Length: 442
Image (tube, rainbow, N blue to C red; front, top):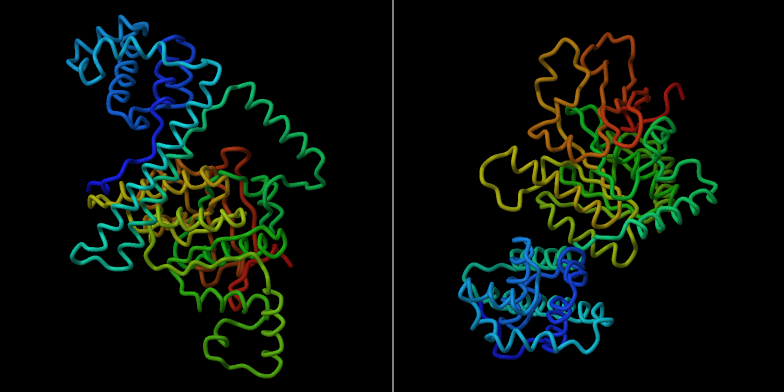
């Protein structure tokens, strides 16, 4: 689609200054190409984009960049006239007001490129309104996808000099050493897990996997509520499996000490109502956002999470569960779809600098073994999940498979992968009436 007949924002002088600086200094060119990641699309004038692409091509060929080599390369590819001719190339070297100000030129050029992208996206959304079959829901989804893509492009440059990175880490360590916290990350409410993982760390993807009815959602809710109520860190809980009513019933059951069965049937007495009112008051003002979406792509979740974070930075994002998310563009290969969604969640964790906890199903092959304790190979539909995850936790309940088990009410938490620390396992107790985990033997 073409944009309306108006001149888009640009600064030709800044573009010419950048190209001239790159011709005069190989060091500045390297900074622009490999640190600032300047691309042809960032230039408004077509001839400037052609010149920059020629510079990139010369570098890949191992050639130095100056007016002679650049003119020769443009002639070889038949693009010299598109670049303004030999005179235009020569003039670029004299178009630099001050090489020392090149960082300002980069900022101007990149910012205007982003503004043009935003304007183009809004024009395309406006045009889509008139297309046959357009719905409000589809237009909003399209808008979110475009906005997320623009935000990702704008924030993708994470290149940093080693000395700068070391300085940042030393500052972080100094601040952490002054803290009275024993666990650096967000605590989960379970000491054994917190010691093994160091809490939930920013940018990490934590996978919680189990067969159905093992308590994945209950465990995730335990963690989320502890983080929101005790840590007072904002939580985004994306529930693709259970409705808002079901999630809230579990919450009220745990805090009012009323079984979920009685809540579902509304079999309540005056004492129950008093307990429910206390639970409701306890939840007042707690930074916990519930996202009740039966159909959600990673891009849509990322966009929603970014919008929330713009107001108040999130502490953790919980996804229940991975295999229920919708692929962006499925090609019919379920393994590739799940791999892409797993990678998308890891990218979201790093982009927002927030831990992401994603629940995952396990393969049915677990049921066919004599030892049904799950392993990493049991992750359903994708080995990419294991690769993307910083930690993989699995749940196993012996009394689920053995009615006469000698371990009723016990759940094994198996830490099968921990990128930053030890693996191992520990035991938790489980209250099926309140659908709640608790420390063992309490």
